[in-house]
Image (cartoon, rainbow, N blue to C red; front, side):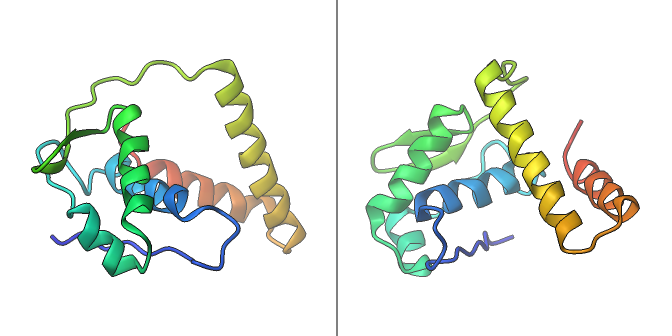
Length: 129
C-alpha cells in the first residue's frame, strides 16, 4: 500500500514536524511495519512541495525516536522498535497539557463530554496495545 500523507503549508506547525507526526501516526497504527521502506527524501519532498531538507529532518527525528534506520544510498527503513522507554516527566507533562488543550477546544466548540470520550476511545482503539 503506498504511503499517503499530507501537510498544511499554511500551518504554524513546522512542516518537518507535521511530516514526522503523520509518519509517526502510520507507524503507531501499524500501517507501516518493520522492514517497510519509506519514500526517498527527494521524492516525498516533491510530493509534499517542501525542500528535501525538511523531509530529511522529519526522518532524522523518527530515527532518533527509534522508528527508522537511515542509510545513505538506501533510504529510510522502519525498524522493530520493541517497547519504547517510558516518557520523561517533561514529555508526559507536555503531552498531558496538549491533550487537555484539545479537550478544552472541543468543549469550546460545543462538543458534549460523552462525544469527546467516544473520540478518545476511538483514538485509543486505533493504536496497538
